[in-house]
Image (cartoon, rainbow, N blue to C red; front, side, top):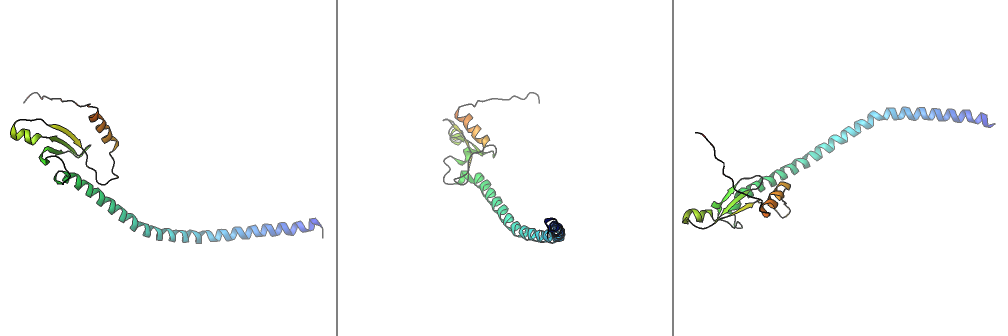
Length: 152
């Protein structure tokens, strides 16, 4: 047999193989898609439970932090007279007028003003805004103003 006689059957075999392979892949695509959809649904159901638990845990943690912020003046570690503390919540949790109760009762003395944020846990950090406020206080960039409203 000559080379030319061998080329035709080889080319025909390659074309036939390509056509059969293409047809097989086209036939398998819907089956593969259906299997993938089924696996995705199973994964969604399994992951949804974990996501729900994580969400509940985060919500609990946030709620505990909010409660700790509100309860700080009655906790043993609070170093000031609770009645001197004013909860504002944002951007810092408290402004403490340390000594205000004593001044009001005894009509003498001085006070110190403290900006305080309550954090729950060792890893909690100040927000960017809180850091800016802290820096302003530390640099004594504070002042007093009185606003007068005219009229009745």
